Image 1 (cartoon, helix red, strand yellow):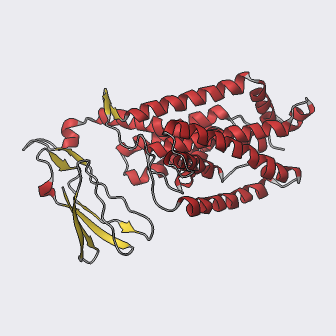
Image 2 (cartoon, rainbow, N blue to C red):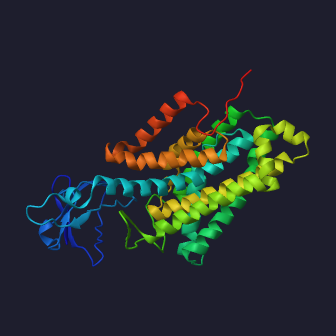
Image 3 (cartoon, helix red, strand yellow):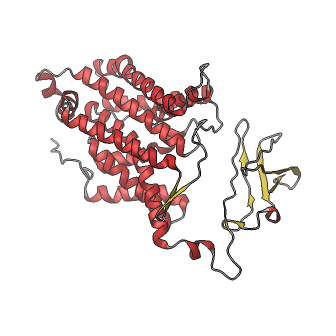
Length: 385
């Protein structure tokens, strides 16, 4: 297939032909807006462009590559209905979007669980939690691609990244947040500090990782498999299984282990928990370690479903907060339920609204639910005063 790239003013830049995998690359001399045209006469005889639009107008920034995609679909027979109407029913699309919503919801739930545990035990609304998601993805990428002098397969690279992020989460509370608590720093002040920490970490990632989009060395492109009306890459099914397993294990640990029961006791009443002999600081540090580790795992899973970039945690931070708030602040199982609701609504809502508005709709649902149940789905009412 032939790709023609010109400047916005129509000056020719380059013509290229895609390779056997359909990928192509055109270097440009300077940043700006460009026009990319796919020559439809060079398409395979049995394929056509989905939506019929063969022109893209990407904006290229200095130092950042811009990705341009042309989605293809089987060509409809002459006189047949459009592909979406003829081959895909409303219910098939609904099933596909429900699956994608569950996938997204589980990723959000992993990140939201750590945020909820930290809030429940410390009262801190941590705006830097999204950077912990980014940290996990970037660490796994570095271990996976040989940045540290050795290359690991993505699976051991992800395990190592999660372990390192857990240690860093423990150290973050041991040497930073714990110090602020001992000095009597207020919750509002600590929340503002977390915003500054998020900005600091984000631009450290920009310096070290760069502004470009990257992908893991494995599992980047997989052929989809069909399960009933649902089509997805095998990695999506495996990722959802891992996410569910981790959420179940953490949930059982909260209910059955001494540390989990201690964390729940601190969440209910820190002073009473301390007076009953619970080492509050130790439990909080364990919670930070677990929260950092599962946030890193969420980053790895997010990086497998999209490109890696230094703002990936920031991009889903509002959705994480929406899941935590919708489920009930400080409740681990509420974070899971709220995140699944957010993920499902984001994807399924595109049946009726433009994809550009899907996140707005999820936040709208959050507002509506909280109008009728301010404590969230699984939250508890509290007496004030």
